[in-house]
Amino acid sequence: MPRPHAPLWLAGLALWAIAALAAPAAGLVLAAAESGTPVMLPALLAIAADSLVLAAGLTALALALAYPLARAVTAPWLLLFVMIAPLARAIGALALGLSPGTGAVALARLAGDVPLAALLLRARLRTRPRSWLDAAADLGAGPWRRFVAVEWPHLRPAYLLAAVCLALLAMGDATIAAVAGGGKRYTLGLALREAVLLDAHPRRAAAIAAIFAAVALPCAWALARGLRAAGQSREGREPPAARAGLAILGLCAAPIAALVVPAVTWPWGQGDALLRAQLPATLATAGASAVLAAALGCLTGLAAPARWSPALLLPLALPPAVYGAAWLVAARQLGWGPGDALTFVTLLPGQVAIAHAGAVAAFAGAGRLADAARDLGAGPVARARWLWWPLAWPVGAALALVAFAHAVGDAGAAAFTSGPGGSTLAVGLEILGRGGDLGAVPRWALGLGLVPLLAAALAALLRRR
Image 1: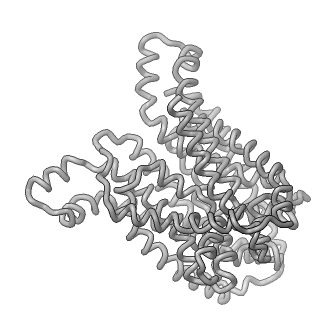
Image 2: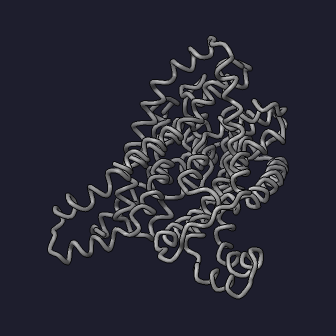
Image 3: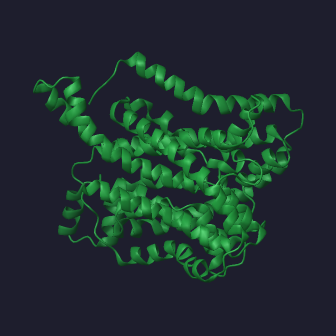
C-alpha cells in the first residue's frame, strides 16, 4: 500500500483538523467567551439527566435486539436501514397512528439504532474464532452456552462501542424529538438547537457541545480500532441466519412501510410545490459534497496512516446537531450567513468520515497486492494505473452514493445552516411536518426513505460491473 512522505500527510491532517474540527470549535468557544449570559447549570443538568434516561432505555433495548438481527441480515442490508433519514423514520412512526410522544420517538429511534448496533456487532462477529464455536458445539454446548462462553467475551467491545454510539445519537437527536416527540420529549440536541437558533445563547451551546465532544473522542478512537480489526479478519465466516432477526427487521421497516399508502392516496398540494423548488439545490449540494468526500475518503483509506483514522472519524461520532451548531456560530463570527455554501461545508466532514470508514474496510487486503506488484518491479505510475484505479473507482462510486444518501436526508446539521425557511429538502420537510401539511409530508418522507435503496441498487450494479 502506498505511503507518501510523513510531512505531506501531517500537513494534510493538520489542514483537515483546522478546517473541519478546530474552526467550528474555536468559533463556538470565542462566541461563548464574548457572551455574558450565564449557563444556568442546574437546568442544563436536568435536561441532560432526562435525555440520558431516555437514551439509556432505548440503547438497552436496541442492543438486546441487535444480536439476532446481526445473525440474520447481511451488512449491506443493515447499512441500508442505517442510512434511512431519521426524519423519514419520525414521520413514518406518526403515520402508523402513534401519538407524538415517547412511543413514537422510541419506534423512530429503534428503526435506525437496531440496524446500526447490528452492523457493529456483525463486523465483530466476523473476527471471532469460529473454531472455538465448533469445538464448543462438539463438546455438547448449546446455543446459549456457546454465546455466554465464546461469543459474549469476544463481542463485549462491540457492545460497548454500540452503546456509546447509540447513546450519543439519542441524546444529540433533535429531528426525531422535534417531529415524533411533539414537544413531549426533550433532548440535549433540542436544547442545543434552541440555544443557537432561538435564544442566541452561545455559552449554553458550548457547554452542551463540550459534553458530546468529551464522549465522542474516545468513541472515534474505538471506531478506528474496530475498523482495523474487522479488516484484518481471516477466520470469520458469515453468521448463521436466525428467524427472530427477520421479525426485528420487519419492525425496523415498519415506519417506512407506513408511508406508502398516504404517499400514494393523499392529494398533491402547495407543500409539494414548495419542496420541489428546494430539490435542485439540495441535490447539487449533496452531490458535490459526496463526490469530494468519496475522493478524500478513498485517498485516506488507501494511504493515510492508521493512527490518524480517529481524527478522520470524529465527525461521524459527533451528533449532527453539534456540528451544525458549532459551524453556524463560527460562521456568524466571520460574517458568513446560512445558505448552500455553509451547508456544503458543514456536511463535508461527516461525509468524509463515512467514506473513510468504508474505504478502510474495502481496502483492508490491498496492501498485499501492492507489495506483490512492487516486488515484480511495477513503479508508482504502473501501480496507480493497473492496481489502485481499478480498485478505487467502483469503491469510490459506491461511497459517493452512500454519502449522497446521507446528505440528502440530513435535517440535523442542515437545520442550523440552511437558512430561514429551510433551503434544503429535509429541513423544509421538517418545517411542513410541524405545520401539519399532511398531503406532502408522507410523500416526500417516503422519497427520503427510498434514497438509500436507490443508492444501494446503483452501488450493487457498480460492484457487479
